[in-house]
Length: 389
Image (cartoon, rainbow, N blue to C red; front, side, top):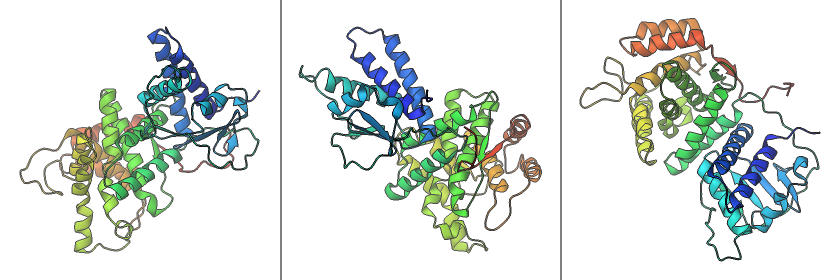
């Protein structure tokens, strides 16, 4: 018997939640357990594919142009199209509320359509989108979808690239999707008994902004956990770290990746990324205040100075000082067009030298202790060939 894949597990959990939601008198704990299982299945699915798409045709389920053979007898493969769901797209920003709302929508369409019940429209929401029209049917290979879940951060990197594209096009950060990426990074970090600090290896200079954002987010969450911060604070710091350089989306790649010395105007453009990042994040809605603060402050020195200029001198936020240590570490450990990567020992010595002047000594000491306890692991943006399932 074939092992049930993550896409199939997600749909099975979704069908169960729909069935539970349709019961007249169901214990709240039963629905909560069903939603818990679906949320867990969603996490595993998004680790495999950042933007999964399903089609439901003639009692069969197609995922990424392949049939899910393990769902050939799944009753909801027929019932979802009856409810007008021929195609379903799931995004990284999908929340538990989205999942429960989608289940309620299907229940209303399938079970309550003859009672005159109002149907809540979900087409415009950020989490799950579905189509009532069946698109042109492509050729489908009748094979079992069986891709192993490998430990890499390709999906997360793809999502960060998409986030940066949204920022360049719309000028704001999709907050829910950014939060979802941080959640996936946290899942990767806790995939083993001990905390793993996965750092993405840079393969091309154009990947720097993406890989650096992921690495600083992982390092910052690990440092916050090492300091025993509350989980809600760890997540907030992870989001702020992921977005600390969002202002660089306004800088041309030829300036970011310039091999020679920057001109004065180019350097001024680089320095503006802190101000631009804060403006972008503040324009992105509520809940982005900490991220905006970190974006604005992460180049300010612990003792004062550096950029941006403060009208009135004041201490920077603790989150800014924590992220700054992780930012400096990853920047120096990464190959850049204008210099090779520094060895780890040299970077650690540099951090210790800058403690008390440029960097907060408390976080340098904590970072050193964390690195002794949790050695980072380099992971690839692409699964290695020949990796066993």
